[in-house]
Image (cartoon, rainbow, N blue to C red; front, side):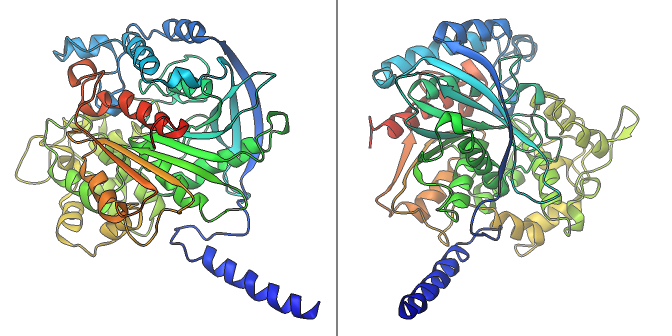
Length: 478
């Protein structure tokens, strides 16, 4: 017995050292301390016709792909900007259903009776932890239990009213809710976090920060505690597109430190900004006035200053210029007010174009135009600056962490993506392409949608990438 104790204690010590040396910005503990606050049952969707009705009731025939993906938000907005070929969201939903059926995924359909819940949870048990919210889409069938949990990390959403947990309106310009229903119809309990700053949470959104992994993973653990749903022992797979692609990989990055809480099966990361220190930094510096989603830069500045309060020049009133005066307030003050859930990406981007830049160029010439000369200097000319160090710390395409050999990873990205450069997935290929459990798909087209249908190639590729990701999950492709 004494010999056994002497053996066990060193083994435990080694395990703890291994867990704490995996490169996370959070300090791992023995268990993830997230908790469930409440679960409120919302609408039931008994068949795809009920999804159709919910979308029409929310006005999907007059709305378009969200400007957070480079779209136009509404048909009237698209027409006013000269984009007369852009399709209404409800028409796109019809194309999604056709593409879904022809992909072979309907062969894997187990249940079409889906219950939606609003989940409220905390990411940890600290006194400072605020409530977070999200949606759970649960396949409701007395003869079938969910085959697993699918964590679905959504693309950027700037409007609180379109948060995944909001029952009415049952709409979002990123098709998150309709796709969540389709994923659940394949037999998965689909967990869709709102992200901090959305739903019932009013904190600053942690845009492209690895902390998105912690808050997303926490919702998975929270739903596992709902005893009536039978999810406590289920494996977890993860899928996400755009910012959701980053959050999907960040979630896997976080969960691997807590093997007692999460068993990951597959990760499908799609068109995400994984290479912040490379491809995304280049985009920040070089994107011109034609770039369709400039709103991302003020979100980066706002989120990074909260995460790194010691970087003085990241304070919004120092990183962003003050002119012109807008509605009686300095430009930087007014712009920051738009980042907390009440405005569309179109509204944020439109305000950005009115800026009076700090340099010699006195008209808007791309996202970097809104920033101060000091911020630009630290970003462009000082590779060891605090902001560049922060971007490096939150870059997920790197070789100092590696994909667990027991987890299968899938990456897909359109080579001509005009919002999130393909260079992000090239960086993944550089670091992880050698692993046999990593599949990387370079897309050469965006069918069934086009840029003319949605506003950007990025938005157009979302349907194809979700379908390819789910084919990988259910085993149609390996």
